[in-house]
Image (cartoon, rainbow, N blue to C red; front, side, top):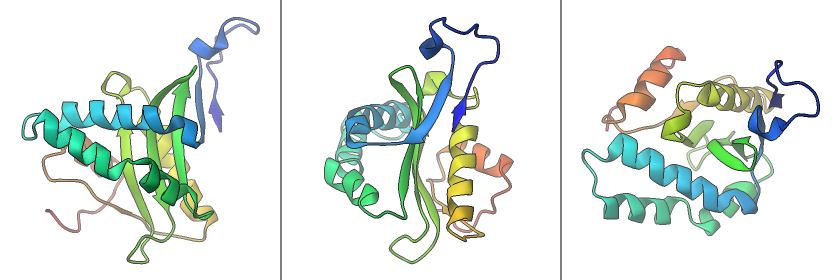
Length: 163
């Protein structure tokens, strides 16, 4: 799915003017880790150290973890890009380890937030789950992630548990 800026005249440098939404490949992993780090610093920096953030990103965004998600054909990692830059991403699993439909690892670069990037990614994940025959989804975040929780509240998701 591609969201094109309708005001861009054909033939101009469109890479700067449109947002592309596509499935991630291993070539995107470095930028996914970069987005994860920047977003966690912005959202969690008031209660996590730089080292804790780096350790979490290394653990949850290793090539092995990301390849593990992609190796299941039912799963997907979607990236929103502008030109060659990944602005945001999310992983969607019709069945997680507990057999629940789930969105996880969902972040948007701080400078790209509130510009529709998260909205496009979320809707793509919702459609991915619908295409898989799933009518519900689970999303988890920490209580201190006020940006993420606000986003999910606006999407009508119900709070099930705080941790």
